[in-house]
Length: 124
Image (cartoon, rainbow, N blue to C red):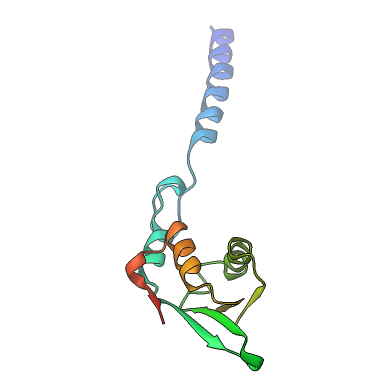
């Protein structure tokens, strides 16, 4: 009888470990599982993004994107993707993304494609 209990106990332990590994991670902000978390989408909907054109020294045009929250979105990553998408140079400083040239329409198109609502993006 004791041997059968040990055998059952050994069978029970691997099943319990496999169940623990299947459990999903939980978001600390909303409490939902990570795959169902909507915190990022809510933060994107609350931002008011302005895309404007500035003329710099010697008549060079620069596209400025501001209004994006630096804490909730990785500006460095977005700036890199925008530079690749628009085929231009640029940088991010002081919670702004600056691109060389007039790319207002392309930037708006890209931001809508990555999940920002079109009505929250203002062209100037």
